[in-house]
Image (cartoon, rainbow, N blue to C red; front, top):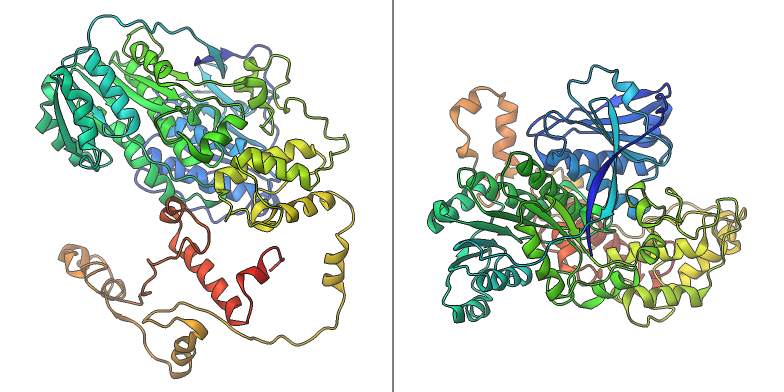
Length: 640
């Protein structure tokens, strides 16, 4: 169940970097690089794109890498190399967060040709000479002139309990499932005072109190958003940080979605309680000699999680924080947990079913608790993982076996899926029965051939896993698109696509529609828009009226948006009158925060991190089609 990442020096001569043009995207503290470049533009310029991620904000660096990835996957004609400088800390959070992001993209099958490399800031060797990676390697760090690559290996942990834990302990996310498990273990180990911090501590307060009160332990339930540094400082000041013996950071939140739906906003949402929360606890307790500082990370940062690029990146930052603290002789451990069977965010439901179908087992409470003892031992690795996995079954679901996991599959060649046929082999045929079987394995329930998959409960993560299963069954003759279930929203539609995709000829019905029929003039039957000053609605009559009358929709900024008077006179003195006017007057969309996610079969968690413009595009696109007389049933399964 337990593993750790080791760094292996690569022997033999390294290939020299091929002649190429590089794009240097420098990241400055406090802002991310704006990259209005598509992969096609880079290819025409002969660019082998390189993002030079400087040390600083892990969120900004990860968001910049996300932009580069999204630009890259549009064409994938040129390799993408994400590079960071090591400085004195080879495990900077900004670096490992990016690595975890790319690992998730590889699991989704959309990061072919994407590599990560670290170089020392003072390396006198030409940068170009460090950018070549040996065949089969996608991750490399140069340290003192030696190239090292990560490899996962099994490790034996000492899980025996030795003595008692310190008297006073703090648990962030303390009223959640894993937080309460940690609290129980601490009480059984002799803790006399517990501070259980959570954003909403009142909801499960009775359960938390009944769990620990029988031992005589003093329990303080504290409301705290660990993503806010000021809130953490107030928490520790009130809890008496000077007498604290240990801290356990279990807080976290999910906002799953395939890479194409990720944004800086979704990254920020997940980073706040997890990556930022851990950093804030660390900073606020820097002067306190803690006996233990245990961070609850996720295996998503290690092996990548389809649909969880943001969550994996946030946990990668936690791993880097623990490694950095260890090098500074401070107590710290980051545990990359796999899914738990009874508690945690993956317990029960479709998520649990999908994970087990992919070969990822569930950790029992007794097995997980046994690792707590190892986490507080100073000789335990600063970063280690605990998860149950059937390696052959799991690796067979991946587009290719990463070099990181090559030791887990000695019979498989890194860079190719286990059991996959060579690219030249004939692809397998996947019929309707095969698609339905894959759906059953993914969702854990029977889905009709004509039932809309999203309405049947298939979320973004399930869509990735379904695509990977069908890709493995179809072989390498052609590549399934990551947007497959959106383009083909039923099992029958997917089966029809699989029966024709990858062939030389177009499907007959599509050829007839594309080339047959008479050419006629375009007629606008209906339109939908959302404009300022309430100019929206069925038929968009107000939009037409505004355009025909020349009405001015610019109004003073409402106080519900921002207060222009908050800007100091000093700021106004440094900008032009035009800028000042834009701060005080603008056009505003009304009700843009309202969205019927249930109608579009979008979960509340996904809707919360969607860009407002994406929500509006969905609503207005359907509104325009509805106005022409189409219904949702008419459009389902069509090319419209």
